[in-house]
Image 1: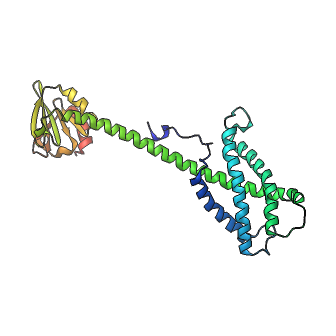
Image 2: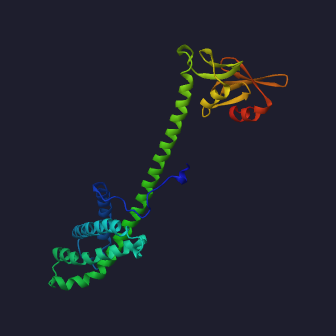
Image 3: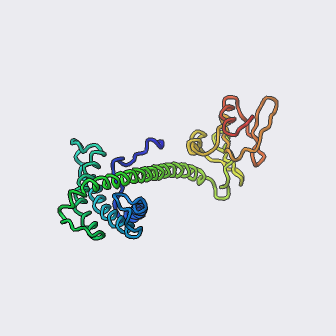
Length: 282
């Protein structure tokens, strides 16, 4: 299975809203509040930097704890109704952000009256704050959605990498299992670095760096054990491990591979192409 074929999470899913996410979001909120305090929007030029910073911190955190649970839990709820207008991710976000903005319109006047001396009644401030709340709510929702999008991409990439590593690990484990099973057929004193296999009548001669041993086994059965092991068949009765090859020699037109134990292994014409590919012969 290729990397593209690995299953990934639904792209419309929102990153889990937990204590870790709240911590990372809090850092972003502090940055946003600091920027707003410096920009002094909505006629706040005469407000001090400290008061402005505290005002925007309280306002942004209030907005966060209103918008975030509404968007997170609301998206999860609406996503289960695919046959409605809410089947589209952006429709759900806009709808949920609107609900959050309406609620926020009733919270903002409290915060404004806490920081500023405004004689107007509370309820008269609600409609005045509605437009500003929608603007700020839209900004917060946009930043939240973009940040969530990149977090999801990161999670999906990590998930793909994890699955790919698990698949590769499973393949390596299977390969090693077959090789180990084959090597266990040798006496303990002959087990070592595998160099080559040689068919000798009805016996298979297994060469290692600790000597050789005869096994009563068919050549093709031995090759099945070593199908994924780095090596190549050089002749109808010979197989060599890639790491065992140190060079080549020629006897007339006959090509021979030289192994680490100075053994010479014949290469027939029918296997020459794949031998050259594996051991990089000229």
